[in-house]
Image: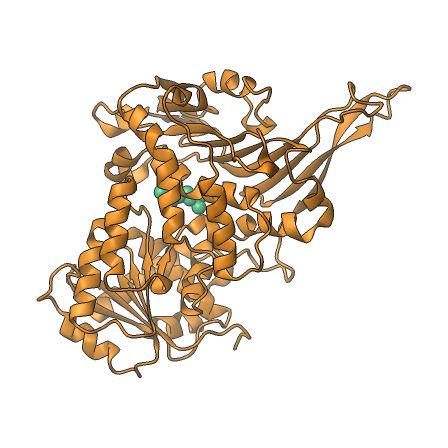
Amino acid sequence: MVGSQQTAPFDYIIFGATGDLTMRKLIPGLYNQLRIGHIPKDARIIGTARSHHTREEFIELAHQALDRFIPEVNKDEAIICEFLKKIDYVVLDGTKSDSNWKELGSKLNKAPDDRVRVFYYSTAPHLFGSISKNLSEHKLITKESRVVLEKPIGTDSASANEINESVSRYFSEHQIYRIDHYLGKETVQDITAIRFANPFMGAVWSHEYIQSIQITAAETVGVEGRASYYDTSGALRDMIQNHLLQILSLCAMEAPNSLEADDVRNAKVAVLKALRPIKGESIRNETMRAQYTKGGIGDQPVPGYLEELGHDSNTETYALMRAYVDTPRWKDVPFYLRTLKRSTVKVSEVVVTFKPSANGVFKHRAGLNKLVIRLQPNEGLELFLNAKDPSSPIFSFQQLPLSGKFATVDGSPIPDSYERLMLDVVRDDPTLFIRRDEVEAAWAWVEPTLQAWAEDKVPMEHYAAGSRGPIAAKTFIAKTGDEWHENMKL
Ligand code: BG6
């Protein structure tokens, strides 16, 4: 099948090709894009890593990854076979100048100079600089080259700056694609669609009608096999500094002048820069952190974070922040950013709670309107309206949910965020990637909190694995007259 959205021919060079992300997301993502006709015949995928594998062995690993991570309905033997033929492998230590660059170069240089080259760094971020340097020294960066940087871009402003500097010595900003896979989620893009394609929504989208916005990413999983990374990161760095602040930006930004990358990113960065600083004494009031203790999810007992880790730790698995965007549109509207591991349910959602009617006849009897944008799972939308309870002769109300699912028009599964983003790079469309000033603004805002937490200025709360977080979060939100939306209510 030849899709109308087929890209130009490209070479995708993956550093860290034997790692979990490559096998779980990148290889399956590219396969799926080939299946739906977006990848041209002569595209090539070249994996590189230090592990000694022959091309055949690497293809076998990729085949196993497809078996494991592609849903049955999307498996097509002929396409799998075609896909695997596009794969090659070079044993290479990207950080060493005298490694096997010649072999990589001779493969790449078989293609014309103007072919798109994407270098995907699926490695630890401190290696980004030396890989870029070696690519440059071996003259592998062409005009049509792009580089994809995986998160985390640093652990604070200084280290993020160092990473960005070390890459931008060899690539210009328009060639650098910083990935935040939440932006590739179709449902996250729905925030923009809902706000700006529905005039009635635009009309009420401000402090005049909105009381608060809750942004939640709750996961049932713990730290899995990533404890050594996670314990140096924690929930605030892992989820809030990037994914949740990006969602907040999309909820709060002014209408961009166009959907061009720079217009959208200008609108988002304006929000990040308008975030009211949380520092000094306000950190105790506006932030909360917690760790899970032992509990259970479904009928499975689950150990506590410290037991899983096997040593003591001051790392939070739950983070909550109350943010304010100091622009005329968002005057004093709290945005709650909340994320946790080992929640009782997996849910990522945006809950917009509207103010009560100011002078209506039903002012004291009707409930609050809410709009719930469910990002995952059960992707969809619910709008809670007040309707009369038919069992009552007088006006008493019930909340009537109007709901719809975000589904593709042709009934096909919603594509995974990575596969869409990977081809956006080939198409040279950075709209859904993070610009350097966004990374900097996000770090600048979270940094005082990170520091205060590291100095134990905010107590570490606890919650049982399989719960909805620490009970103290109930009083936290009540301070501003709000309560948590039902599925994550305490
Ligand atoms: C990653 C975090 O960026 O996002 C993980 O490092 C987290 O800790 C994951 O589990 C969540 O992504 P998703 O798409 O499953 O919500």
